[in-house]
Amino acid sequence: MDTLPISPTPTDHREFVNHLDRFVRESEQIPAAWDAYSEDHTDLDGWPYDEDAYGLRKSRRDADTAEAFEAVRAGAHHLLAAAETQLTALPARTVQNRWVWQIGTLHNALERLESLHAEWLQTRDSLTANARPGTNVYEDALADYYAESWSYLDDWATHGRAILDINAAALKAPPRILSALRVPGAAAARRRAGRPG
Image 1 (cartoon, helix red, strand yellow):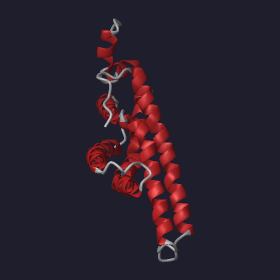
Image 2: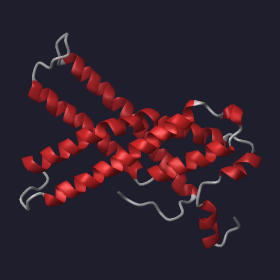
Image 3: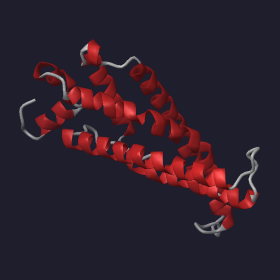
Image 4: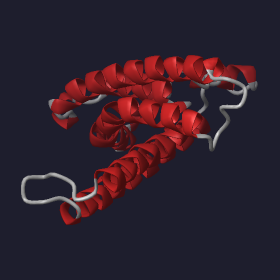
């Protein structure tokens, strides 16, 4: 996993939010394309007409979702921490009941994704020297990693919108509340840059 800057700045925060927004939008299109394909290539009982082609297309869905999430990965912990900070300071009337549960779901999904990523790196490093990208051995191992990750990536696709909604609510908060909603670590970054906190 890539690590965050020690103290993300407000600019970092906006960039992480933009990456998440892009992922959520892309991840709405990926399952829609998959559903359309699946409907056209299965019988009335849901069995694929061509299991090999169906399996390849499903692997492509998993890979596309994983690749779309890569831009979010580096900022995922920060986004969750920021959303939790914002939730504690927002006026109760602006908070949706589901947000706390959704943030918990995202935390759990991220933990599983990190664990699966670490396992993938071990698997990749244990492959023989001739098992390079493009070889069947490498691509099969990568496809297994993507398949195991997919449901957790789908959690981020489904519930990631909560982080965006919490952030939008924080941006609409009155100025006195906004001061309590500063991005975690931003004050330290301003101090290092010689700006007032």
